Image 1 (spheres, each protein chain N blue to C red):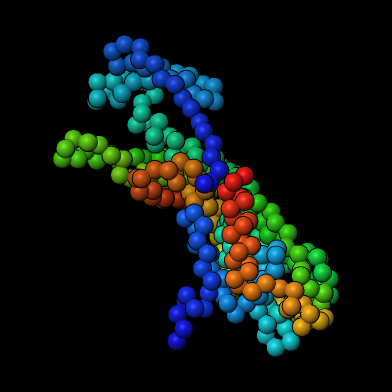
Image 2: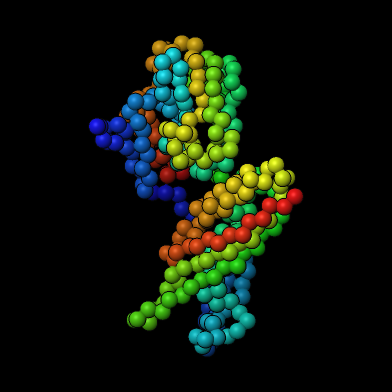
Length: 151
Length: 150
C-alpha cells in the first residue's frame, strides 16, 4: 500500500505543514478538484483552510448553473471573509449539506467530509487541463505563504 | 519570518517594595508584590497581572469570535485562577491557569442546540487565537458554563 509521502505532496512553511494529495487537481484560488466520472467534486485545499483559520460559516452557491468566476462559496472564518470563485462553467448538481451545521468539517477533513460542491462541467477535458497538479500547486502555496510572512 | 508587532511597559522602583508602571496603552499605576511576599495589599501585583493578562485576552478574543459566529451575547463573566508551584530549588512557576467563564447567549428554542454548538466553537477559537494564551507555558484549562436563554 502506498504511504502518505507517495500519495501527497507535503509542504512545510515555518511551523506549518500542508498536504496536497497527488490524485487531485488544484485551482489558483485554493480549491481542490477530484474527477468522479463526468463530475468534479471540489473543496478547499489544506493550505487554504489552514491559512484562513477556523471556519464559522460556509455559504455555498445553490444547485444550478454556475459560470467561471461566479462565487462558488462564501467562507467566514474567525479571522477573515473569503470568496471562492468557480474555475468552471457548468452545473452544480450537489452541495455538501453537512456544512450547514458543521462547517468545521472543512478544517477537520478538507479532502474528505469537508467537500463543498459537486459540479457537472461544461467542458470536462478543457477544464481539467487548466488546473494545477499537486507539485505545481505546492509551489504556488509556498510563494503565497512566503509573501504573507514577509508582509 | 512571521510578521511581528511590539508592545511595551516601563517600570520604576519607588523605594521599599513599591513600583510604578506605565503601560504602552496609557494607564499607569503603582504595584507591589503580594502581601505574603513582602508586598502590599490593594495594588497590582505581577501574579495578578499574569492571570489578568490571560483572562482579559481570552475575553477580548471571545467577544470577537462570538461576533464572527453570529452569537447574540447577553453576558460574559470569567473568574480565572492561576496555580503556582514552588519547586524544590525554590523557583516558582504558574503551572496552570483555569478559566471559568459563565456565558449567556440569546436564542430561540428551535435554534438552541445549534447556538450552543457555535458558542463552544467560538470559545475554542477564542483560546486558540488568544495571543496571551498562546504565549504562556502554563497549562490552560477551560471550565465554561454556557447558558442559552430566550
